[in-house]
Length: 173
Length: 235
Length: 78
Image (cartoon, rainbow over all chains, first blue to last red; front, side, top):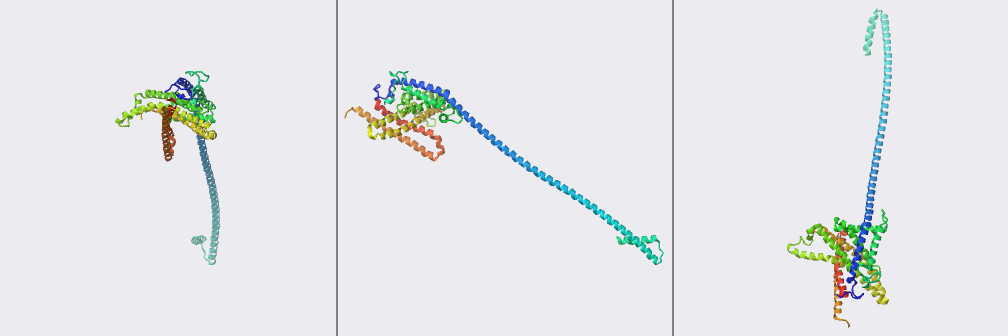
């Protein structure tokens, strides 16, 4: 190998005289770059990335929470609706029952009234019949005693009465 | 090849501490990486701006790569791997600016990066696993007679790792720039038909953008793969 | 024809190393094609394997880059 020919003919890459210079500056550069990167740039970017990841995670958690809240709200709404429905049903039932009770009492009252009226009527009818019966008995007795009087049969008033009553009772029953 | 030359910024000879174009473009790499990761993400907004989004995507991309490829216990090396990725990515991308100097096209630079990874991973493997780390070379699933041969092959491929790791990156960068230079030379040589190589250079430039990102990705993911071998050598 | 025979051998060698890049091209194409056919059979598993795709491509491509490097070394350093 020829030692460092004139510039332009040899390969500058193989010019050993410049190696020390290149290596020196390379080492300086690498040390500077390493310190700049590892002390300033990389921690900063790592912090930004971690920050972003944290924000995204917390945002997703918040969204999850909101979703949960929405679900809870929906459930509460459904529950309230069901309760309202049950309440309404209950009120309707109560009203129905009340009306039924009212109706029942009214019917009972009416029945009672009717029964009372019927009893009264019955009683009156019985009275009237009794009085009519009495009248019939009186008239029968009178007529019997009159008839007996016509046939001149002397009869005891008491005997006549008993006979007539007997006959009347038998026809009445 | 003069685009790869190391020159002192203020004239004079190049000794080990001289500020050179290497210094300038490495400083710009640090500035660009910091611009994206610190200035771009300065809003610390919950809903990120475009620049902040890009910074966060880069962060998440490398973080997931380390986690998926190297495992959960590799997360403590994440800042270092991230630094590697940012350096390689921005050095590659800044190198694509016309008249720029591509620091990653130099074997010296990529070799230091790769050997740092190689040495730290090997030391880490021995510290964490002790002699069990050597099980990486002893393929216990192979027939016994084959194992010494396989061990030799594994050993060679293990020591070839930093070489391929560094030359891949430097070679890809150098190749792209050299080819672009050659095509650009055609453009001035062809005269009236200059637009053909110009179109070719445009297409090549798009390809080089892709290569710049992919090489940074590959450099990082290979670092993760080597790290996984150091953390979990048993397979 | 000017120039010495060593110069000629150098350029022939550089030309031969270019074949190596063809090999890398075949390898990368093979990996990408197989990945695609596998991904079309089982698209749901494809997303998790893109990292392996890129690692495979990187390994295959590295060898092509090595041959390119050898070409550069022959051209400029030897």
